[in-house]
Length: 415
Image (cartoon, rainbow, N blue to C red; front, side, top):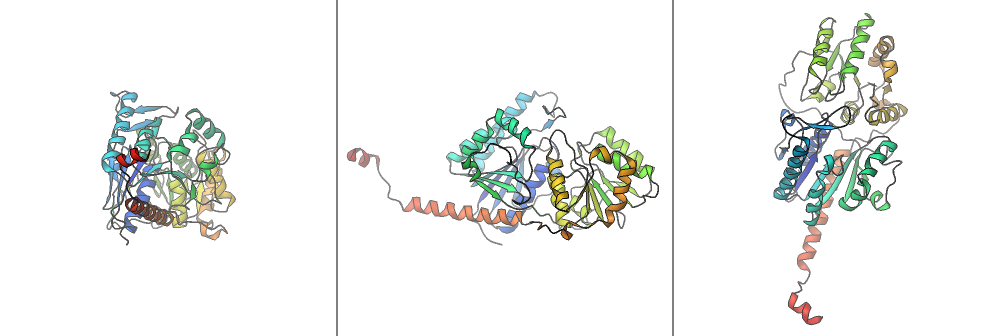
């Protein structure tokens, strides 16, 4: 473990839907404190359940008021008694105040360049003026170019990225996907791109972890991530089991914490009528469950995809296509590279076709059997870059100290 001169890194995760942003920030933060003894990471998060996760020493989080993204794409406060405009104003003020007090060396913003409704823009300006290095972290796939271009053009996002960020980290390899592909992107923005590789995951070191229910000795894991839009996937898998009584391979279903209560209850009722189907509503160590699985059924969100690659599991993806096409693009590219099989919703909704796919899943080749280099070195790449940034910052500071100081009076005389 190296010492990094007591560096401070601030991370921002807007967290309006699902768990992906917080879990990605947490993985990066843990890798950094594992690598550097003197480093501290503070995560600003809007997640309702940030406290449900364990954080390593020197990693902490500041909770800002939660906002929920509706299926319509609009946002609402989790507290119905507070207007959304007031909630956003509180979030913006807390983010800026936290940044000013924490005084980070590096500020990493996850996915949303200006934050939710622009709530991070003032903080970016303030930190840049103090010499803080600003980084935008983008997942490998954002959305279709058409939808992203329209969204960002209205908010002048590309111009703001060019002026307010020192670097842009893409959490994937260059030969997998370019999230800015098809967008009108200034050259000075392209010059800031750095591909890190995928963020590899590991099983937590927690001893004696207790699951809600005992797990079968072998099973297929069905995961919906945060679960806010995962009920359809769970229903399609259960329908296949109900349709095909020869489909007896044990299943472990993890709906996720944000699934609606009525949808969750229906899943439990249907699972109770089937043999060898276990439902675990939520577990903060999903990596442990995935590590023990024979195969995985998921929607191909970023974290699920990285975990499947990390634990080398045969995978069946049923990606959603609304409101974003991110999962479809990632799943399609994974299929092209021989990393997984994709079943679109129109086919997966047919119980017979889903049953056929589940029959085949345990015997499918793992990602490592493909000819594609998995590029699971993203966390190491980030650590190396942080070390380089701090070295450059230290050199710049020393140069400033050694430079002769001019006095205002002398300047007046010269002029």
